Image (cartoon, rainbow, N blue to C red):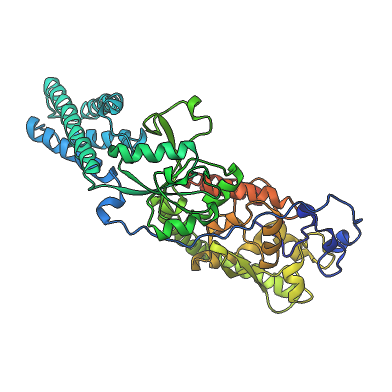
Length: 501
């Protein structure tokens, strides 16, 4: 958990002039010769889009998922009314159905709604549910005889199939009649993008209305042949989404390179849109259960940004509960550390420092003071004090054991930080790293954390900033409650081994 107090960015970005600055370098760094790789080309600075919610009506916001779930409940009620099972334990079948359907993706929003595609999974859910039901009722008295149990399972299967067929038919007709349409933006006005736009206009069963393209270099031979107008350049994607109230974005590449598109799409993480990618070499792409398709062109649905996951609200709740309980439980430890810091270094036991958090907003982080900086300039520009001669025994111990980070539990309780997330950096170095480290500012898409994926891999203190940014962005793209738990377990192991900064 322990982090640096200041920074020498020469390790990563080649700014070697700062190593020889008596203010910004610690004693060992002042002696380093001015040799090293030349500065790399400046990275493109990313300006993250502010949160935006699509103004769609409430009954369209959830897609087909809530209606399919409601349909399965109705099918279960109908089957129960027909067969009238004597023991209420049969409700477990409904729970199994819902769980299996969720795991295999039968509740996800899809462009193609096909009962034949769903049939193998519905049959599998029926078998699993019936087997678990038999296992449970075998332990209970007064259950229905086996023939009646089989009858209930068969009636439920038929009811689910019929209700799903009706639901899919209703959705397809609603799409064709314009009742359910999603405003769609195509990124790339090349051959694939044009083909997609024409197909979506002709085949309304997909429910997508192509309102335009985003392309920095659209075809110049005959622009009027484009089936929709070019609404902006690649770097204007966020503004175009807001201005035209886009619901779905299809990335058909066009003339943009992949690195540029990754950056642009990441800036739109806070926008309420669904994103589809046309795979490179899509003619060779193998379709799977989670691949959508538009008339022969596969589309990969990009995972929703973490903010749109229902588990993200649970993450904040866990932050509040854990940080509050930890402050209470660790209050004796906090008191002892505070007294030790006061004994070694005098007044002002807490060290306050400005850091950059979510959406690039600064906040004041709290730590136990391990030494007194000369002035505010040193506090904001000195990279690492691990080898500083001014560190006393108490300062070295609380840094190695990460006890100096405990006051940040208050930052977490207030909402400035989270238990797990990218470690926050000072504005001075965010400004520098944003110019030299690719996609550095993309790590500000989520709240800063007490520990993170990069720290769990030992990237703390005087280590590669570029690798940290890569690990932090990986964490954001692949976040899950289990990933947070894994990071916490790895961090606890490092604290026990005293591998702090």
